[in-house]
Length: 370
Image (cartoon, rainbow, N blue to C red; front, side):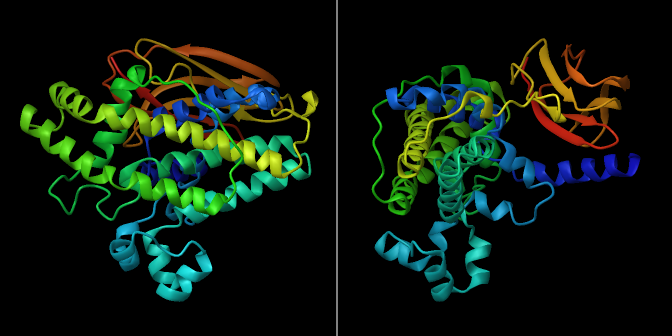
């Protein structure tokens, strides 16, 4: 088990550079999809917490699945036809036939990953597989959110071609974590999507112009603050970008709702049986829930479930893999547990919560903001 632990730590470090909108942003977008649920979708209200708690599962998979990373972006401006005509081939097979598989893989699969996940969700609805459906819906929300994050749809994803190196995390994580409480919006009317593929590509095309807006905001904030790591910088970046950032969040949540609704309607609008709703804390599963609140200031609540009597090790590590705190290290009987963590003298930033038993390893990203 010790060897397994260090493998996990190494993979966590690898995944740090691959995060998107940050866990905070994805949690917000998935949970706020419920704002647009119509009366037909009343039964889906029980999904909202799970959609939020599993909003970053797709990011977590990057740590061990080498095929996951390209699903989270598309460098659409590396396609000549996009620069000339404003569009690219909508079929993955067509894109590969024209440009080759290496080119397409290198520039990302985001739209096609979104469409494939939609199809998987629809298939789950058809066969009434509700536990898998809500997890596919959570992944769908993640990919939709990435499609509404401008720096996930450009070759200049980190400002490396415009002299804005590091803007990716400054915009999607540092700023969002700091101002998430100001990202508030309402839902609005939804309808069935006629052409899902066109719908996905349309919002990518619509969101691409905001790449320049992010770069302009970063230039402005850097000019105001004289640096890129101060509160003054974050405040200036937010002031310059909030008028398009909040609508991007709103549109992402709304698009997720419309896609879930469309998959459900096209599957015949099946009724959900209460006993089949996904519940992470069932007695026969191991699970580690996302800490709440997250981000947090003074304290956060941690919950986990043990499927059988096990030796449990629950630890907090920093981005370098160094141990910060050991929260549990003892034999536990089967059941659900919760505890509060109040970090002492820890700096603001990202930490990982790691749960290990002899049969199970899981981790969650936590954000500390004083």
